[in-house]
Amino acid sequence: MRHTVAMGRRRRIIWILSLSFWTAVGLLCGVQIWISMITHGHALWRVLTYQVLIWTVWFAFSPVIGWMARRFPLLPPPSGAVVAHVVAALAIAAIHTTWWAM
Image (cartoon, rainbow, N blue to C red):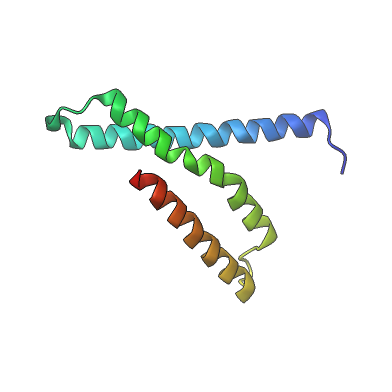
């Protein structure tokens, strides 16, 4: 398959949408956490910055997740694909938990 200008533009849009999605998730979680702890006196910008940094790590995982979905489809569920997804999910969860604990 040839790489065309349209394919490059489509890929760029997908990357921008993915980054926007994970940034929005971070902002929404940050606002929710800030509101729940409003009496603690935390600065809104600090809570938002922390949450956006934590959630944008999923932006880095997005290509891996997309590749897994294409390489090991779950419908119909072959046992090898299920095992691959479980192993990948556990690995990504461990990385995310480590990053979250920093």
